[in-house]
Image (cartoon, rainbow, N blue to C red; front, side, top):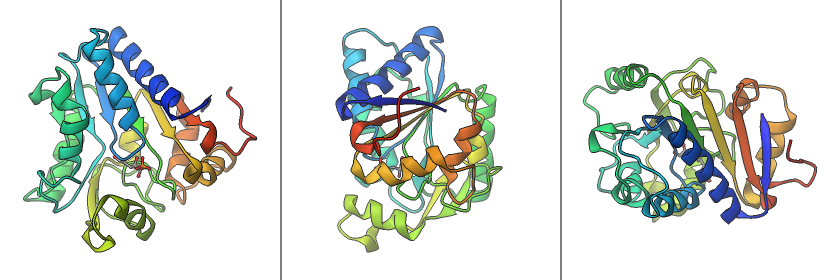
Amino acid sequence: MKIIIEDNYENLSHKAAEVIKEQIGQKPDSVLGLATGGTPIGTYNELVKMYQNGEIDFSEVTAFNLDEYLGIEKKHEQSYHYYMQEKLFNKINIKKENIFIPESKPKNPEEYCKWYENKIKEKGGIDLQLLGIGSNGHIGFNEPGSDFKSKTRVIELAKQTIEDNSRYFNSEKEVPNKAITMGLDTIFKAKKIIILASGEKKKKIVKKIVNLEQTEKIPATILKKHPKTKLIIDKAANTKDLVSN
Ligand code: F6R
């Protein structure tokens, strides 16, 4: 796992956007895996700026989002459908038919998850996956204890995740307790991965991911054996003992 330490959140966001720009430059019909949450907002802002300056063309890009809350209305401001439209898709030239975000109310969730997993395969797999990290080490909504071989599926959110994400809702009670998430194996199959962590709150988990052996108790440790993963953190998320390598 390559570690890149940036001075601050702005530089981290710029770096992540540069990696995505480079990927699309090399392969205009790239398949991207995308994340939501607070961390990638700066990256999406940078990508929008690059698009407006004519530096990136998304017309042949396909995007698969990692996850979505189960049962939430798509038009709810905290749904990941809403987030992605607002933060990125409405502002760039990606084609509607090339956008995939897990359904929030599928009729048959199990069948739907299989369909999503197969769709990723049908499109040739993910070329570059963007990830954030939960404070408990989750990636996507693969909570601690998730099988490293897991595929896209319905998952119950951990108490910690509900607590962390309650900052986006009026109260903890409003946070949906289930979600659909790409699995750990689905994520691991991406050809390249960038995982972002910013701010003091991520210090502890970053240290664990870097220093501990692979363990299903900390899902992000699966990436330690991925051949092309870059962990991009800012100084605030560094415990001081990590250095860029
Ligand atoms: C979001 C996702 C989650 C977040 C993680 C960190 O699509 O899959 O794993 O990346 O919960 O969220 P933030 O960035 O809000 O700290």
